[in-house]
Image 1 (cartoon, one colour):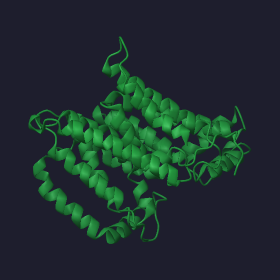
Image 2 (cartoon, one colour):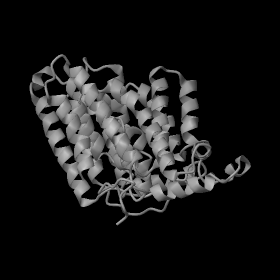
Image 3 (cartoon, one colour):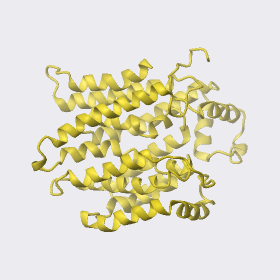
Image 4 (cartoon, helix red, strand yellow):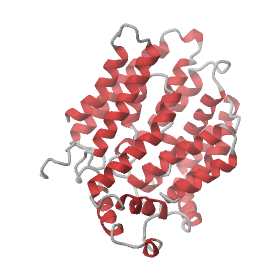
Length: 356
């Protein structure tokens, strides 16, 4: 388990320890860079048994290595991912190297957005590790690439360049069909949602939760031609993250001074509302939750910004809340890791270690 202790505690130490000649902002960024570099090392050097789907992806790569281009278009996986595998196969037929290439590429796609929006490495790391997207780095190769490309699409959302946004949504879609969810990003980000909207949003969320089975069944029917994320209604018991996201939503509207927050923070807060709505379907079907991953990844960046823009009358509330969240979520992450919860990600094993 020591690799995960390094992952969370070294960045915290870098952020806290006083280093002569280096200010807080630089330490903060250096700590975040270390986090992503070490996460990349863990992804690249993981054993084939780490991650539910790792072996499957290795087997897919083995097949693609010996296929010609005319055969690739009939392959069952998305064409963007298949073509990437084929390109890698020109240089190596070693599936471990393929895993490494995709791991590096995924992290490279994440880093620019996280460094640009970073406010507090400790809190961002704590939140990042308890999100369901964390274990997907070790298992869901195609979808994490699609999510990373979605971060490029997000850049063009901010710049109001709808054509380049749509281009990168299309590219993400060629890696994973669930990327169709990115189409919601542009309108949701630019919608001016104020506190008055909550009189409509809150009842709508309640109705979505009450009728989630019926709504999910309808959406499944409508999307069956464009995405593989379909399935039967089944009880998953996934209520914990709904409660957590709702608490984050309440926190995001009560704590900040609306006159202080910038447009991007408002846009990210809109994403949180969408995440809450999408998470309402998680108890219905496990696959439904994965449609939410494209927006969950912004939560670790939003919450520190909300604390940054807290109302003056709250005094130390933000500081206390921040420290409580860091301690609680890191403890929860490490407890889950020791319990082995999460897509066969824990306990960690390097590729040169023997299988159990």
